[in-house]
Picture 1: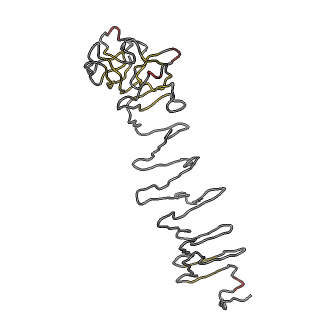
Picture 2: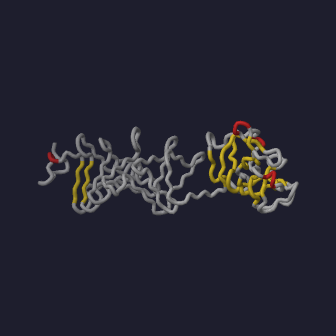
Length: 321
């Protein structure tokens, strides 16, 4: 069959060009076609070679524009192939939507391979202060990183993890070469409690049977174990032995060391800053340890704020002794 557009010329023989559409020009576009409606600007189809093959010395090999459809559409073993020795193989740009979208039914939406030990399989940057990479999964894991070092995070905040139930989980050892800074106040440990409806934050707790705790009920009780954490402005900085759901109905975090707000009773004696505190006859409350002989082994800690009379919530430095 002859060429309906005339001879191809001495250097481009019809038999030597198996492409459906082939254009080459050293200065401008090899093939230029446009359609402002919803039809196809250029359509190329080939059984065994490229449907459309575009080459340019200094511009774009193939550029497709469409007002309402696909600028470039490719179907085959590889839908679209882009190659360049010195620049991007494929470039995608959009003003109001994604520059490049990858979608797959059975494998990865976008798959990148790098053969340079100093490069990255996928590199993403944001020059307007947003995310470099954002990974979202509806029901699975947002991001999986594997390697000799799974994740390297650099910046003023190297790594920020947020979670509704659990922000981060580490399986294995954790090595820290700098300070571990906990912004909250006390070191607490979860305990099973008796009468949990009476063990709200700030309650003084004592040892009960089988390692459980219960609110204190008598003065100078040497079974004192600590104060339920979380009252007032203080929250636990670390919680030991936390198992199961975050808020277990029969367990409470009890402050063993550090600052905690505590229920206090100044009925028998006013409480001043620095006073040693012990258990009070008022359930779940602390009072001034006015009798040193009885206080040994029953001290909760030191008052950090005075309480002249009555009952109230005061900050206490927990130091059992």
